[in-house]
Image (cartoon, rainbow, N blue to C red):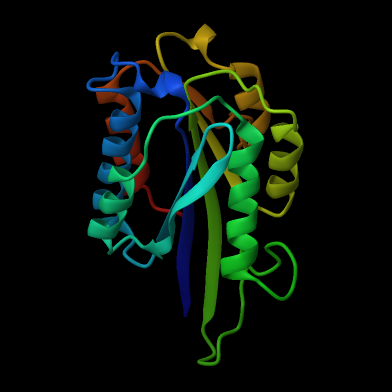
Length: 214
């Protein structure tokens, strides 16, 4: 018997521009509301899944370590603690995700060697685990390190990287870099999209929460 678990790591931009009120009341609050909707849907679709939240601006920090999607109240509490501050450093968010996965999932055997594929448990069941990163930003990257190289290394281990741009219009977002960071599906589709308003953002996260990962 195979039990499939998906690990979701949300990397949310918290730079100063995320306080803009075109996604009322602000872009950051809208992103947090959308993520709350994701957890609600995921509890129904895949209650064994886990979620973590990373906030980044000039630097990054884990706001919610890996936790079951069943723990909705803990996720909401973590989202309420996120504040807007600083600039936009894409690499900081990805590096924090890399560190989280090293620490929480495989502290003794190197980066992510057991995060995907199958492991034989003591019970003899296969526990297939996939990892998906959802990276959301409203701006241009001003960090000194190359996030595309970090994302490339993560994708090479099997992680799926999805990127979402939000804000006034696509040109306000570092679309070229976000596209380069994103995974490419078997059909050639790049896992990047720009979402131009709050309701569409919430709809996207609801849809993401309801999907079946195979």
